[in-house]
Amino acid sequence: MPPMRNRISLSDYNADWAYKGKFQHPKRDEGYLTREEAVAIYGEMGVDGVEYTHCYWDDCPAAYARKVADDAGLPVVCYVFGVDLAQPPSSIQAAIDAAKRLLDRTAELGASLAMLMPGFMKPSIAFREQQKWMVEGLWKCAEHGLQIGVTVCLENLDDPVGRPLTGHGWQLRDICAEVRSPGLRLIYDCAAPL
Image 1: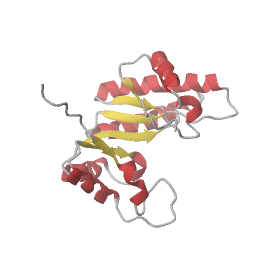
Image 2: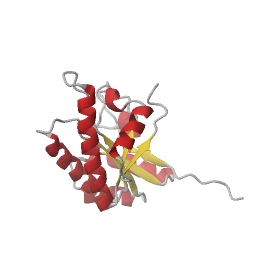
Image 3: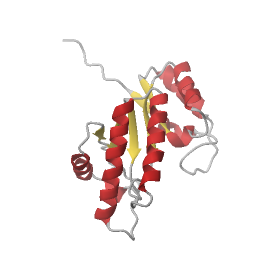
Image 4: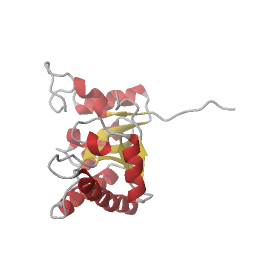
C-alpha cells in the first residue's frame, strides 16, 4: 500500500509575527518580511498551497495577489475574511453584499474555499436574534458560493467578539444544520479552545 500523502497549506497569518507594515497583532519590534516574501518562502518549503487572509491583501487587486502565489509555485487554496452577518433586517443586505464581493474575490484568486468569520456578538441584542440573522446571511452566502464554485467554511474561532456565536463545535454544527446548504462546510480548529 502506498504511503498516505496529505496536502499541506500554510496561511499567511502564520507569518504575522514577522511582517513589517501590514500585520494584525501589535508588536514591540518591526518585522522583517513583506507578505510577498512570506509567500515566496512558503513556496521554497514545498507546501501544496497558501491560504490568504483578506486584511493582508485588501489593498491590491486579486490578480496581483494571485500572481504572487503563482510566482511562488503555489495555488491560493483558501481566502479568509470576516463579515458581520449577525445584523438586523435593516442592515443585513449590505453585509451579505460585502460577503458576496469577498466570495467573488476568492474565486478570482483561484481558491475554492472561503473561511468566513460570520458574526460579532452585540451584547445589547438577544443571542438567538443575532444567530437567526447570521443563519439567514450564511444561507445566502453559501448559495452564492455554489454558483461561483466556492465553498463557504466556518471555523470555531476563539476571537472574543465571535466566540459567543461561533466559538464551539456544537454551535457550528447547529448553524450548519439550520443553513442546510451543501455550500457551507465546517473546519475544526483543535487549538481554538486553548
